[in-house]
Image 1 (cartoon, rainbow, N blue to C red):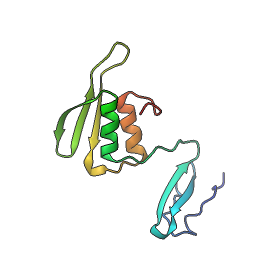
Image 2: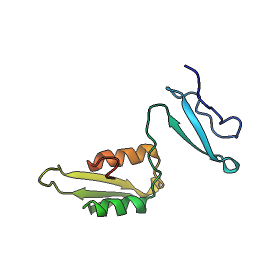
Image 3: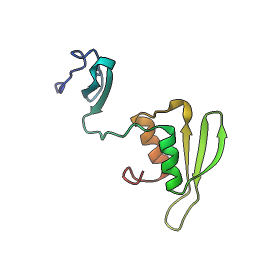
Image 4: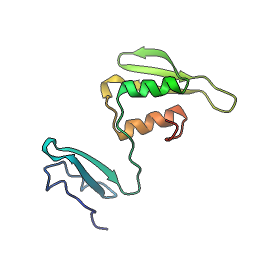
Length: 115
């Protein structure tokens, strides 16, 4: 299987040629070398800041229960048709990349669209 649209080398962006499966590179701002990629078959998740995640969690009924250092624990009690959920938000990692965002969505028990 060949690589699809690998433009990283042309625009001085980091290359993701070693990914399995190969990734398609999209350079948003070539002058700043800000690269975002979408691996084949994977959905893109938004890049969120900690304040945006907090606002989403509050809107979905989560309450901040504790904080240790930069790690905040947000909890939603169990409801009639939903289990208890605890989401960890780490201020030091903000803005959150696709993988951390996906992990927080999974922890929340919400779907991607609900989050």
